[in-house]
Length: 176
Image (cartoon, rainbow, N blue to C red; front, side, top):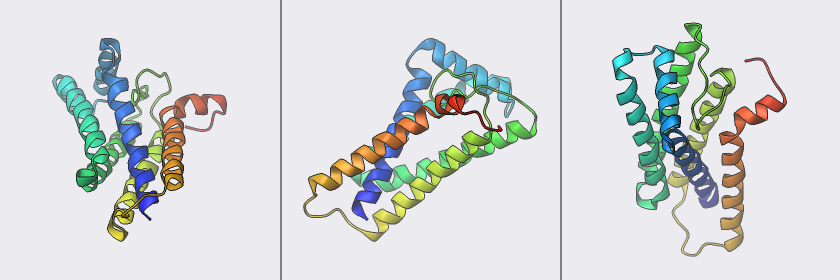
C-alpha cells in the first residue's frame, strides 16, 4: 500500500505543479486564465484576478504539501477540495451554456466540458486512494528501489496523460 500512496501523491504533485506553472509561467498565460475565469461568470468580474491568484497559489501550496511526507495528508485533503471546486465550477458553467476554453494547464482552445469533469473526479479519487493508503500503512523502514521506480513511472505517465488530455482528445474527439 505504501507504493500506491506514493504513486498517488507523486501524480498529484506533478499535476498541481503543472497547473500552477501553466497558469503563471508567462504573463500571457495568467492573463488568459483570468479571461477564462471572467467568461465563466461564476462570480463578479472584479473578483477574476483575486480568484485567479488564489487558484494558482492553492495549486502551488497543494503541490508542496503533497511533496513533503509530514504534510501529505493535508495536501491530499486540499487536492480533494480544489478538485471538487473545479468540478462544481465546470458543471455550473456548462449549465449556464458557457463555452470557455480550458486554461487548466495553460493555453488550449478546447472548451471545458464533461471530459474535464471526469478528469477532475478521477484525480479526486486518486487523492482518496492516497489518503486510504496513508491510513493503511506507514513508511517502510527501507524502500525497495523497484517499488520506487514503478511508483515514479506510473505517476509520471499518469500526470503526462492528465496534463496533455486536451491534446489526446483532439486526436480522437468524443462528445463533450
